[in-house]
Image (cartoon, rainbow, N blue to C red; front, side, top):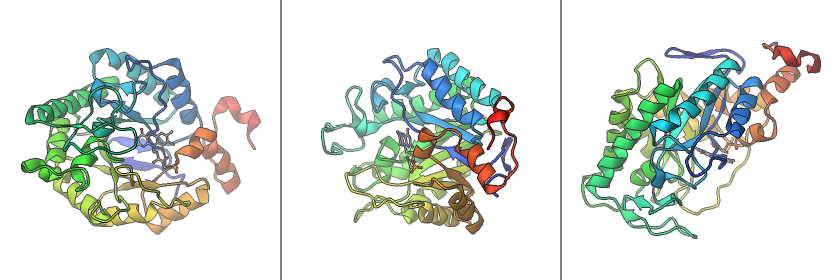
Length: 332
Ligand SMILES: Cc1cc2nc3c(=O)[nH]c(=O)nc-3n(C[C@H](O)[C@H](O)[C@H](O)COP(=O)(O)O)c2cc1C
């Protein structure tokens, strides 16, 4: 099944392998696309990945994880981003982008968050967001979505995971507000509402979530599914299931460690999910799909080591795929 096409709205993935967003910290301070990004995403597209989701791309300068994040806070970013999209399309893959505000984990100016509680380590205490700050961020998400559409992306992924701003609102660990935003789902709903007012209905809208915080009183798969169910009527098509990132805790990671979470979220929301975590053997990806853990599988770090894993392992699994013509003489 892994090498079978997957259709979602008007996009067809040629297989079910996803490159998840991975920050490359390779932009300059202006957040603009560099030649590196074209080579990086282009290589994975040549390598046969069905869907490529571009790294966390900042919706506001003070919402960057670092000063080397890619940016989508200005119309000036659109031509560079479009060159990534065109490259991915030319190489036969589907292009997604993850948009993000890093909240209390931003290291690019004054960090903001739902409450003045630090992530710890060398992170600062964030400024508690006022209602104006909330409004400004919601508008920035909306403008980022409009620019993502202009750049030609097929899929937009809202970063609601890993302890960045949206997740900070959803977690009782980082959200101690007393106003109506004490229910973090309200902030999420405002963001999704703003985005879906500009993101075309025929394109795919996804959200990445951390389905577990691995601590007492933290977010669980049930809580996160409840939040998704609260907004899914606004047009959420796909959930990208990850975990952790909001507090400093050691995660017990082993091959496929987040698949169980993906399965739970899939069951509780009845939406298609992308699952993964330390998967390096595509037989494991195949099993996860046929068992019903996930609809799509992400391969993160292994794709940094081996951009061609999808076409190489196809040969090992005896699956015939469209091999890149220029490389046929190197085929195993
Ligand atoms: C270098 C690097 C950068 C990452 N950046 C992001 C990111 O921008 N957004 C995100 O949601 N996850 C990010 N992640 C998490 C990955 O998308 C993925 O979920 C994680 O690496 C687990 O998958 P894997 O075990 O297959 O690598 C990053 C991971 C790595 C290794």
